[in-house]
Image (tube, rainbow, N blue to C red; front, side, top):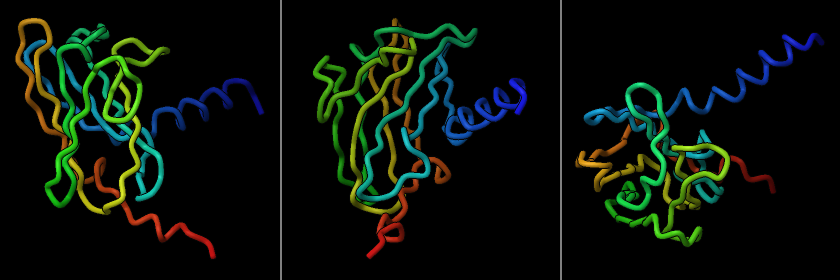
Length: 148
């Protein structure tokens, strides 16, 4: 297989999950949010995958310090994630390998449409957006994957 073809295949599989992410512009900022593993299934590890950039494409670093992430279940239950530097449950953090990318871990147990609300402030710009795209945030029943 040629090197060019291998690179093209790698690029395709790297970009596919990002294509399902939802994009919202606020002021001079672009927030792109999705699940770390798409499609997502109940009982399987996933998490927040949020990129924040300026409109000219510059990554926004250290935004976790002034933002809060709220995960909203299909039943309306709310779970708050803080950029508190803890790197654990109910926390989100900036990626070590990609500037302007923020991550968390979660295991969702309820199938259906989940929502992610991001609120707070970036610089002088107030942020309060909810990501709720059915193609991104619908969690499927993981029992369909079980083998017995």
